[in-house]
Length: 173
Image (cartoon, rainbow, N blue to C red; front, side):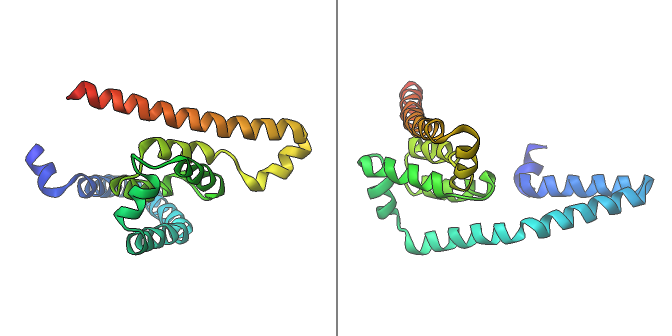
């Protein structure tokens, strides 16, 4: 079984299994299978523009951002500017979080620190378009304090992630 999985690959095996499930469902309830396929196609068409943007970002990041640049600004020996970049990047990022994972994975392969990834993801909770509504409901002081705390705790979270991963790597050696 392992040889089959290695030969085909997990993504293709998953696709084959899902296809077989749809075939079995089609035998017993053809309308349900067609409805499932139509739902999939509508969802795929709906997220296709976002996927295209993410793949364009990946493409241009591979063209424009070389490994040396990533290591210099976001690598192990980067300075406080890298933390600032991660905070601002997380705050201004938009769209579903799962679409950012390929880009972050690509940057990590080029040398981005794991703590900065944690800071980026944590700061996605600070949503600029929602700030006016939050101020309306909770008041300016509450929103300002909450936002500042979220940024501070994102930095603490990123620092903790780095320390935990460093300890884990040392224990493995």
